[in-house]
Length: 164
Image (cartoon, rainbow, N blue to C red; front, top):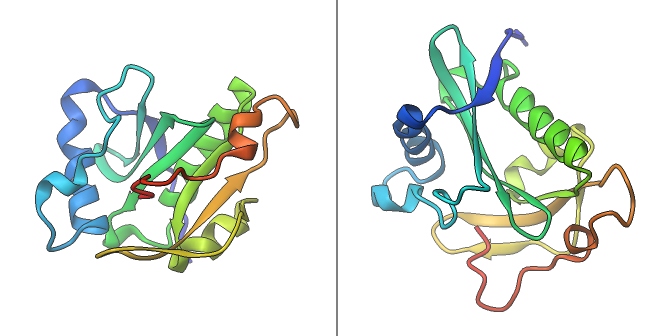
């Protein structure tokens, strides 16, 4: 497996189209484009990250201030899978959570659970299904200071939560 050196950084305001394009192509193929825009995308506490190879954005992920820090919308250009872009994004998110002293969680597709586990994440609970998307697990990356962010540790999706 070839590994590349990616620059992982917050997306600039003019780069938002890159985020939505990758999400739509990778996470919601064949679905209406508005499904690639998530609640909280425009919140001032949300950080959108991009992994760049030169000037090309090859992967994106978003961090939301939601019951700790929530990782969401991780999407890697299919041509770049297996080269380390997704891992670089997740590691950056883990570092940001650690710097903030907060736990980190996500709803991971069942097909991606092994990827997260290799990066130190753990499944929390039974799998659940998202219509039009498939089976998912709540996964957590441990808080660097146990008990420092009880909301993240104890978070369970609430009834009516869209869980995506």
